[in-house]
Image (cartoon, rainbow, N blue to C red; front, side, top):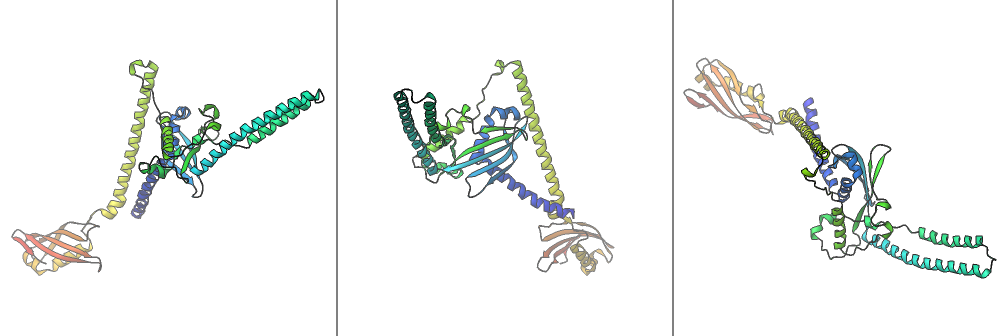
Length: 399
């Protein structure tokens, strides 16, 4: 029973593990995931918690809906000294949608200039009106009217929400895969999807999290309201994508050994030792699972379905022994009293033919009987094709 359970588990586990590995590789090749990993590897807060050499863990989950324009990844990132749960959320807008938002941005700033001019005119008119009233309009009344003019202007400005066009810099996966075939001077297709990471968060515990993206205004080189969408051809889009990738590459400053302090040298030694121990533990873990898998396959698969089994006490063995003992040709050579002493041969599950030898002692002499058989699957019967009797005098064909 255990053999069947083990074989069934193996038949389930092997393809499942292969599917899981291929699925993980597919997730890691997603442009959203690659951009997120670059941000994590460069963030000093993540390095402080996890240590250097930030890498994704084994388990990665992905959530998306066919009709939605977003995707969510959940994973664990780990370094030399720790790990953090991480959530990545990405979304996209099409090229024509971004162009529409850009036109709204341009229109907003044009309207803003006109509104500022009108507001200034009203303030000048109010000031002139107050002077002309010669004290009839009190300072409280003029201040209230001035406040009303300013509030109307601010309320109209708050209706517009600026878009972070700078974040839309990630190429769609099909476009990235087809990059060598794309003509750089071709206009961007209206339906071209352009992605961004709308949220990148790591969780220290249930109550503490680190927001990696989006960046706060104080840490941005260009404010959100100043970003523009001016991509016209694929060359513009690809240059932006590659520039972001290059900007996020981790560049470590190389310090010569003789320029390092004693503390830096000790830290380097500890780091190398920690890396060696981590690598050794990883190798031992792989060795354990490989040996366990090999042992499992040998016990429950190879021995059950692939390994050869002794011909002794099998159907064809008894069938051959009965034939040999009843054969007058063999009795004439070996004697009337025959006794089978040994059987050399195996039945292989993947083969239909079985060849084996019988060591037979007779009352006159001993000999070896070489048997060639075949299994007829249609009739489910064994068939003896040839029997040779080998003695000191020579070989005699019985069948």
